[in-house]
Structure formats: C-alpha cells, structure tokens
Image (cartoon, rainbow, N blue to C red; front, top):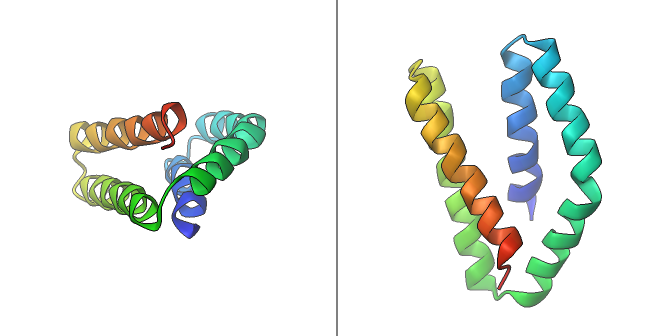
Length: 99
C-alpha cells in the first residue's frame, strides 16, 4: 500500500522543509529504529483486513495528510498540529487493533 510509504515519508519531508536539521535527524533516526515494528504491523494489517478496511484506513490517512498540508500552506500551526495528532491517532489505532 503506497499510502503507508507516503505517510511515513511526509513527516520526514515536513521536518526537512522546516530547515531544522536536529528535528529532521531525530525523526529520521526514530523512523529507522521503528522500521521493523512498522513492517510487522503493516503485514498484520494487510493479512487480517479486507479490501474495504484497507481502503478506509488509506482514505483516512490521505485525508489527514491533505488537511495537514493545507494547514501548513495557510500557516495555521494549530490546525496542522490537530491533523498531525489525528494522523498519529489513526496509526496508533491501526497498530493497536489492526482488524
């Protein structure tokens, strides 16, 4: 599922665009450290879910990313943070209950 790859990459991209090298390096390191767990949960989700369930999660992630990008374009920090939290909540729910 490409959305999961892009979902992972969008956060690194935003950190890079912030021009905050410390933030970018920390986030990149966290991504590298959590990669095995990410792959494990992704495989569990793909194995245990239907096409409709996968599509629903994919749509939810894409929607939050779109809203986050729009908020960043509008320089609305609070709204961007709200969508970031919603995105993380989606991934958290996906990890806790992949079915």
